Image (cartoon, rainbow, N blue to C red):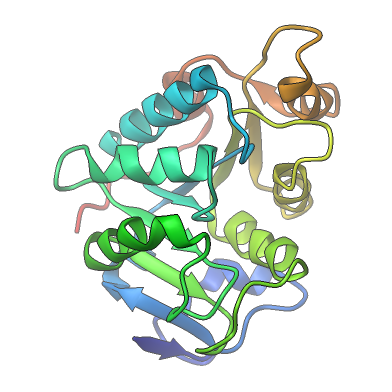
Length: 220
């Protein structure tokens, strides 16, 4: 495990856009991956089958375009995005920002997924070893996801989804925010539609995200 202070050369400079950058930052994995352009894929923990498929499609195609896929290791959309990236070509990478110390995996059913991410991607946390999940950890985790990402793609979010916190922080930081639309009266998409009304870019295909985000492939 690596411990990065703000003064360290490997500390991600994008985190300095936050008014309270994490210090220190704990990392498990290849630090060189921190230099890759990152796109966040987030959404509901209680995702629909359609939402899970969309998460996998966006993660796979955006990763193949050269982005590192970042999410929060949660159930639902987060897990689908991480898995799809790992199941793709060997040069696709993913990062999970955790709401626990890096020696604790939450949720527990993602123990195997976290181990794979640690070997072929990045596990990131600002919390010391031994610190377990607390409700207030996750909104703070979300600010790290938002800051590291060039853009945030909200796949499926209900009205009170924590994904809305990430999206709003991202917008405040000047990051691009994208949201997939759903059926007009589907509660699983109420938050997504709210984001679109507030100025998030409506997207239906991964290429529409890539058209808005300019970055160079930085293969490791």
